[in-house]
Image 1 (cartoon, rainbow, N blue to C red):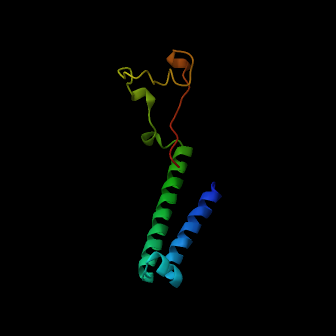
Image 2 (cartoon, rainbow, N blue to C red):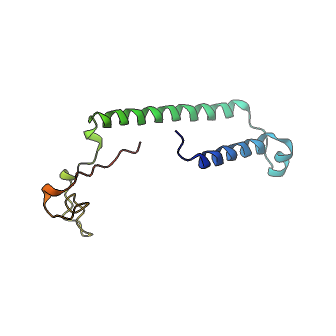
Image 3 (cartoon, helix red, strand yellow):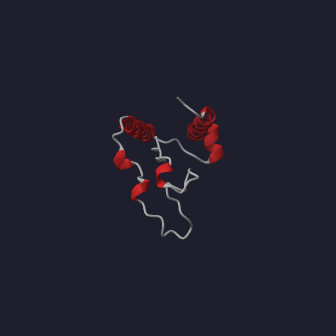
Length: 115
């Protein structure tokens, strides 16, 4: 569920240190901070929760649409792209991932959603 636990632990540790610098008296003196009213902290936390819930719902929706092949409008269609005029080279699906120049031998490379 949480692919990078070390990063999550580091983030949590950073948040705890930030709250300590705001609310612990000797750290307030060391960092020249003052206590932030609790309602401001509650607003920030509630915003984090709302944004996280919306993002998880968006990811679940796109995974569902992609699993049921209902997501053609959000995937990049290489057949409609004309890259032959690109001076850097030909990046069409026939030359990417396939050794043959024949279009029928090309492998279908869909860009995955950022889910």
